[in-house]
Length: 171
Image (tube, rainbow, N blue to C red; front, top):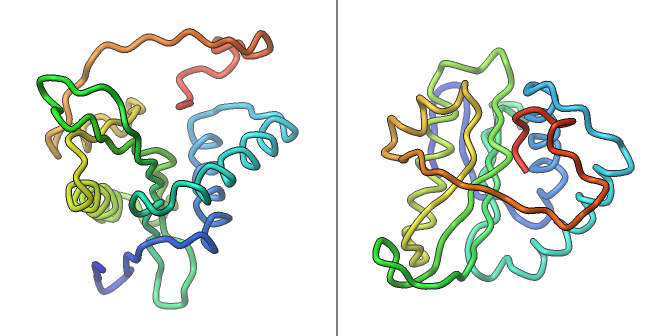
């Protein structure tokens, strides 16, 4: 895929789900989110099942590795079909999540490379839009890549989930 002197980006496979989840968990920790291990395990199991059944729609993510094969960063993708709209007549969209880069590799273009690679992959499989939730730290990166902030709201039917307990964490 993409290569730099300090890292290489490759498409994630189903065998890489643990690496994608490790990156996503690290992202939550960096955001200050407190995740109960039992909740994390339930979400991981459900997401792994979803990814396995939807991997044929397009890449499930991308992984940046150093020369030794260690995780430098990762981004996950789900591909969704939604209603067609004026800005997305196909209704096909990609949702990016779990974007994380190890602290010592930040501000070196890794995140930009991962997001750009994911966006191009989404375009290649016919997505008419790419969405994500941005942290305050990530917002300038995404805006620099052409993403626009749009208002969104959510209603959760899980009575045990209280978003105020999770700060600005991405769900």
